[in-house]
Length: 208
Image (tube, rainbow, N blue to C red; front, side, top):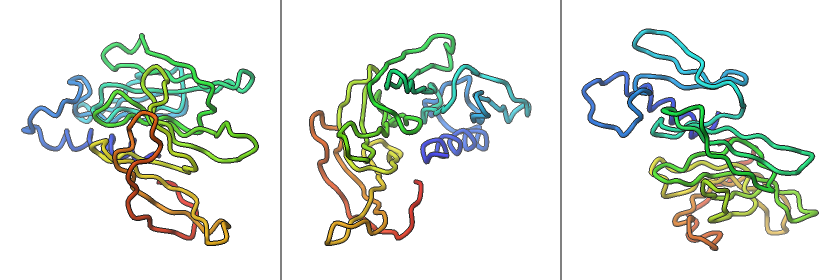
């Protein structure tokens, strides 16, 4: 489970525990619910009446926006070497905005909180290098920013910073584990990295 999906789950659950909260900006029909994938289905569970319903079943690799208004899924066509991302709104599930890219997307894209952009992890097109890169894209698939050599990533809750896991190298350039770094002001078009915060090296591979 990605960090973004986990935060989304916690957000939905917290809404059910305090009915006196103000307007959270969440889609009203989704308040008091838990949204989660089950095989190729997206399920919505209601805490009020303790029932679940199938919201969508035509895709896989789902992710939900932090405000609960949208979800997405993607597929990769190995024969065409292209990926297609489908973005739906919960208030109009039958329609979607889709875009196709020449990137081989590695895992489900994440919604960037407070933004109309998405974060995706893709296989590098720089043959014969074997690496994955982070791309920030808009809803048409246009790349807005890129960070190379990223193994995994997560957005900060406000969407301002990017947290990445990257392979750490020693002084001789040999792999020496993984490092976690925070990148601020990363979403500048044509600019890969702006400010990188202190990195903490860990000895074993992990997933954010």
